[in-house]
Image 1 (cartoon, rainbow, N blue to C red):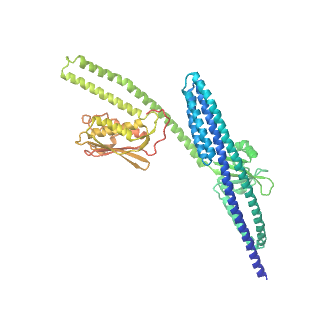
Image 2: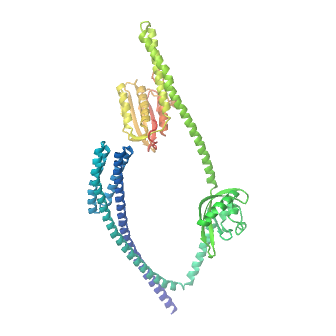
Image 3: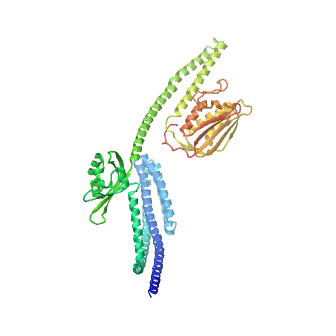
Amino acid sequence: MPINKTKLTTASTGIFFSVALLLSIGVAAFAYSSMRVFEERAIWVQHTHTVLNTLEEAHSAFRDTVSSARGFALSGNDEYRGNFEAGVRQVNSLMHELRQLLRDNGPQLAQLQELEDLMRQRLTLARKLLEAQPVPIQSELLLAGKDLSDDIRARFMRMKGAENALLATRSQESATSATVTNLAVVGGSLLSILILLLVYRKLKREVGRRIEAQQKAQAYLDDIEDLYNHAPCGYHSIDEHTGKIVKINDTELKWLGYTRDAVVGRLTHADLLTPESEQRYLDELLPLFLSTREIQGVDLTYRRADGSTFTALINATATPARDGGGVVSRTVMYDISERKRAEEEIKGLNADLKRQALHLHSVNKELESFSYSVSHDLRAPLRAISGYAMILEEDYAEALDEKGREQLQVIRRNVKKMDELINDLLKLAKSTTGELTLERFSMDEPVAQVIAGLKRENPDVEFDVAAMDGVVANRGLITQVWENLLSNAVKFSSKNEHPKVSVTVRTEGEEIIYGVHDNGVGFDMRYAHKLFGTFQRLHRQEEYAGTGIGLALVQRIVIRHTGRVWAEGKPKEGASFYFSLPRKGLFPTPVGGEN
């Protein structure tokens, strides 16, 4: 009999549980379906709110735009003209947004189309007002736009009225759906709870399972206690009445160097702090905590048992005591001593960086002064030398023999060479000063421009140029890079029977690498380190003219764009010069900087 009763109890418990489970599943399915309907209707309600807000914003932007035109007509202030153009763009954007929002509402969309036509007419009148000068014409335009503005305002009101009516309908449908859903969920849940209570009464008799549950709960509490004591952060709890620490974990005790008996029930939070932090805690933080019951992200300095100190970040909250007899504050602390030391190091590095920046600014100022001196003070005597040489050559031609005229030509050639050298020095100085104004442009354009100029003077040179994509850089400086590299390639391959210059491009990782190759005299790689130095030359002046500054200028410009420059070559087998630029470009500086 007991066996049959046990089987009957087990079977009835299973049946009750199955019914409760099926009922719960049914309630959940119905609730899910109802919630989907409710969410969909809520979305439409939100959609209607969005339409109303956009209509209001479009109307307001339109009024402000028309007002800007009237303001310009009355004051002539160009700021109103700029506001008008910005307003037109904003109105167009908002009307486009309205078309997207109303694409499911045919009547409203038709009204919107008519409204847009009227708004275009009104904005056209406003634009004419910007262009009209005589006061009578402005007055006529102002009167002509008033009727249009009234009609536009009325149409906005009609559209908002239609949307408000639609909003009321959708809100009512949403509220009805929510009510049905709540009733179904509450009713089904109550029935499920009733059945589950019956199941619970039957399961309650199984003492063994309860004992097992108690054992598991105890194990869980032990795990929680272990996690509390060995957490990577410090914890302690303080009794509100006594102010004493009533609980503290092992992590915090290890940081402080105290035993648990020396802290619990004996010390307050303030006793653990240095005098400065203790004063701050008592004067500022404790009153704040007592009023708000919370402290978040506060740095305090703690004193260890051996007298040493460390900095910790604390968060504290107040919670009711388990016995219901008061409030206990729970404090979490994180040792941030390493972070503090890192912050101090960063402050020091920032100070050094600021000093370096000031020094660099001073150097740039000196360089600008030098450039000015070179441009004005050095060129004046050069022009005088060249001028007097020309006077001697023209006015005293008969008094000079062939040797004298040849000497005057030498003087003029050297003056020209000195002037070219001064120009190159100025370019070199300007390449590293001023703001780096960037823009996106096609690299094909400066290359084609430079090659076109070279072809006019060197028609025998064959150019082979690869297609290149856009780049973000300073157009003027990059054009100088191409001018120097391509002119060098032409110059050093000009003595070849069939001179040829090639331009290549490839992408490697985060870099775009450009190459200029020639079939000229080349160079010995042992001297490659001299190529990009100022006034460094690997060939005699008599063989190949130049100032020795071009490649130094290339290197400075490319490095300023955070790129690289290098060269490869062999004697009598040509040379290849490469430079790289960031693939994604640099962040542009404000417009108006120097090139």
